[in-house]
Amino acid sequence: MKPKTPQNETKHEKFIRLANSRTNKVLKSITVLGNLSHPQLYKYSPKDVDKITNVLYEKVEWLEAVLTSYLPHKIDEKFTFDD
Image 1 (cartoon, rainbow, N blue to C red):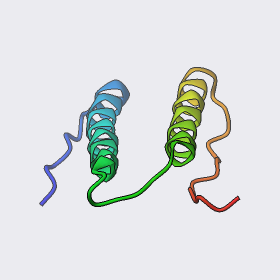
Image 2: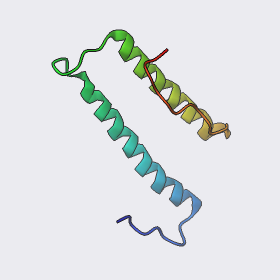
Image 3: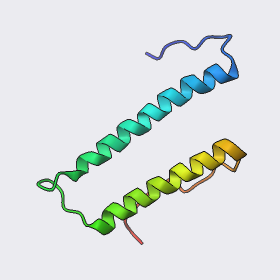
């Protein structure tokens, strides 16, 4: 069950609450992605690593831009190794 949000929560308090939660979810997902690094379980190439890290860097750059300049929030949300 989710904790109740305060009814008198300010916009900044709401931002902090949601940013904490969402950032922690992203960090956990990145850690889980890192679990793919076990060579005894998975086979991957430097090109595969570059594709993953490049899309993550691009998304972080987009996040910084959208948070600082009100850019449109639409961005391709799908990742695939297909070219």
